[in-house]
Every structure is written in C-alpha cells, then in structure tokens.
Length: 637
Image 1: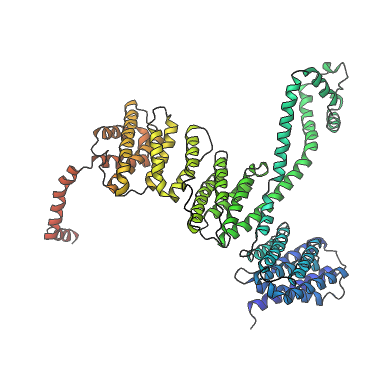
Image 2 (image 1 turned 60 degrees about the horizontal axis):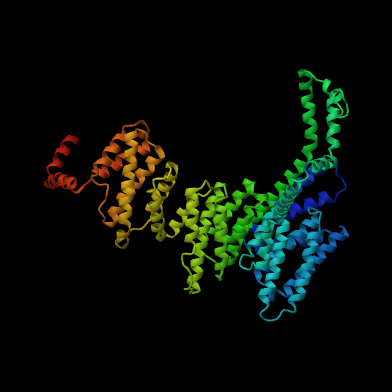
C-alpha cells in the first residue's frame, strides 16, 4: 500500500507532466488563463508539509528535477544548461558535506532545487537569481576545500548569508507558495544565523531614504534661514527674481484651456475682467475642470501607492521571519537587542510613521521580542541596552499609535530585565543597578506636567516586572497628589497610577512601617475630595471611581500588613458616601457596587464584629443540637 509521501509524489509528477505537455504544445488557443491555472496547481502541490521535515521535501524536489530532466530531451538549451549546473553544484556539496552543517546544507539545497524547477518549467522568467546562487555556491565550495580547522563556523556563516539573500529575493515574489518555501528554509537557519545574515534582513527597515529626505529638509531649512536674513535687505529684488524664474505648468494650462473652451482668457487679454460666466455655465464646467486636474495627478498617485503597497507587503514578510526567529529561543541576546533597535528607529522614520498597517506588525514583533524568556547566548550588551532604553523613552513621548505605545512599554521592561540578566551571568557588581529609574521619573513628570503621548502602561509594566519599584512610584505620586495646584484631570492620572501600584505592591512586615504614613496621607486626601464632591453636589464620575478603588485597596493593604486602617469607623467618609450614593451619576452599576462595598468596609469595626459573634454562636449551637434540621425535613415532607 502506497504511503502518503508516495501518493503525493505521484500526484505532483502527474501535474508536472500535464503542465509540461500543455506548455510545450504550440496550440495556444485557450490563452493564458489555462496556463496560469496550471501554474497555480503546480505551485500549490510543491510546498513543504507542516508536520514533515524539510529533508523529505528536498527528496521530493530531487525526484521532480530528475523527472523534468528525463522529459527535457527536446527542451531548450538554456533549460538543459541550468539542470546540468544545478546537478553539478549538488554533487560538489555532497562531496564536501562534512565541512557544512546539515540544516544549512538542507536549506540551500531546497532553495536551489526549487528555483531550478521554477526556471525549468518556465514559471520563473528571470534566471538571474538562479545564476547568482550557483555562482555564490561555486565560490563557497572552492573556499570550503581550503578551510582549515577552526574556520568551520565562519564558513557556515557565509553559507547562511547566501541562503538569507536567496530567501529575501524569493519573498519579493508574488506567489504565496514560493514565499512559503522560503520561510520554511529560513527556519532551518535559526541556530546558525550570523550577524551579517541578520543585517541583510534588517536592511529592509533601514531609514537611509527617509534620512536622506530629512537631511534634504534640514538643508532646505538652513538655506531658507540664511536666505531669510539676506531677504530682509532686498525683498523686492528677490520677489522680482522669483517671478522671472517661475516655470508654469503648461500642460495643466493646456488642459484647462481645452476644458474651459471659449470661457478661457489669456493673461495678456485686457478684456478678461469683462468675461463673467453665469452660474449655469460654471456648473457645466466643474466636471471638465475636475477631470483636467485628475488627469494630471492620478497616474503619479497610483504609481506611488502601488510602490508603497509593495514595500509594506515585503516588510511585513520580513517581519514574519523575525517573529519566527524570536520565538525559536535560539536567537542570542545581542540579536534581539539589534532587532528591537532597528524596528524602533524604523517606526519613527517618515516612510513608516504614517502607515498603520506596518506599525501594527512592528508592534507585534516587538511584543514577541519582549516576551522572550530564553536566549541562545548572552553577551555583554549593557551599553547597547542603555542606549536603546533612552531611545525608547524618547519615542514613548512622541508615538501616538496605540499598539506601538504598548509594545514600547513592554520593550522597556524587557531591556531592563536583560540588563539584570547580563549583570547576573557576568558577575558585574559595579555600576548603578537602578540606572533606569531617573529615566522613568523624568518620563513620569512629563506625563503629569505636559500634554505628551506617554501611556501609563509604561510605568505599570515596570511595576509588574519589578514590584520592588512600586514603593518608589507610590512615594513620588503621593507627593504630587497632595499638591493643591494639581488640576482634577492631572490628579485623575495620579490616582490611576496609585491604584495600579497598590494592586501590584507586595506588603509585608518589613515594609508596613514605610507604607503606613503614605496610607494615612492618601486616605485623608481621598476623604477630603469625596467630601468636596458631596458638599458641592458635583460628583466627577471617573475621579469618584479612582477614589473608591484607592480607598478599597488601602483597606486591603492595611489588613494584609496588620496596620490600623484609617478609614474604619470614619463618620465623615460614611456621610459623604451616603450622600453620593443618592445622586443619579452614582447609580451606575459598577460605581454603585464600589460605593456599597466601601460603606461596608467603613462600618466594619472591632465592636460590630463582637456584637455579631453571639448570633453566629447561637446559630452554630442550634445547628449542632439538631433543632433546625428536623423542622426543615418536616417542611420538605
């Protein structure tokens, strides 16, 4: 009984035989539609299976190449030449396979066979990629024979660089099946990706073009500033020169004259002011004038939009490669830092900053990098991490894209964790362990004082990753919250961060004394704000929600740490909450539940608990004596 691999091979052989027979015939009456349909069927059949290894796919490609070669007796000389050259390259690789890693050799073999099949079948019209690959392989095979001991890794890195270059060229093709083969081959290189090979992928996101545009813009600004100082002395002369040197768009003028017809007037016509078209004539001319402008602008816009779309799609495919590389757990730490650095700079470039599609994919990639817990190798990249952290902090205040904000917040915490890991593994004891806190505090003040794009998730993510820093944020935010000059909307931001900090902070006996004064201060502030809203009959919904959450968390932390709760038995707070509960805005379900829970915690005291205890004891004693159960049984019966 035939296996799945045998059945698949026979199916692919049948499709290729049918395609070759159809293409080689001179009857083209059915046109390109049938040709494209058969090409699509062949490409769909020649893709690696998800659950199978790429070695089996390489064997399938080898059998296909032999079948094509057997049927190419009457084929073109170019096809026979490429088949012969590919066979010779593979034979040389097998003879020198001892010096080459198996996964790298398999990836190269798959791509070489696949490109040869596409060229032999006429699916790929451009054999330049195949020629470049064969030339590179010939040079590397010549160097492999001369490789000495200890140079195997360097030689393997060169082969990986050739494979990555070939993968990128295949990713630019339109067929998704070709790109699937390239992606599968790249996955074999995760453990052998060199710095040079990674640089080829990251060059796709380089901001050279945008940097050149910015340089040109800066030079233009400088020239304008210099020209501005000169123009103060001779404004009239410069205006005259600009009028003489202006070059009108004659093509647009010709189109407008053709559209306006008799209504058009020359500039030199002295009677032009006397020609005043009626409203009906102007309405009739609107369509013709609009078409004249569309005819001038439409082709360029279409071409630019097409190029931009192609670039975005190609960059998205490269990002998918980086996603798989980061998820593999084989990427060394300095590669992850380099990927993050390149993507952060690319996201702020003029070419990508306005594209929400590519920014979403970049944000996903940064999230994957930030969630990495396993590295292939760890090296001393502390300076790179500190530099990138400063860059990210600058970008956080400028980026308005929501997904990018969240990814940058997670990236900062990831970089700090990597810095600590490097210090731990390399036994680095010198230097400031909390070098990042001044950056965070500076950004926090900017978030509270200025109208920046900083997201509070930046600080929450740090506290979630390193709970020991919750005390630093609580102390700083408490000082800001008690400042009378703070506006309500700023105080709302402060209270929101305090609520997040109290949810994350880990309080024990050693830190309870440090936290007790802060709890008292925040309780007094919250009670005062609630009293003001109750007296003025002007409750602010969001501020009221944050205050209730803060007071509930204060009561919880006091219980956990054994500190006396400052809100228990506070009659003023209870009166304010009772007044607010009767207002319309406080009858919304979430806020209503918070206020009710807070009133219960205010009313809870040692005395009330002792008063309820006799009732509980009475119920327990009656249950133990069996007085309650017979009555219930009688009722049920």
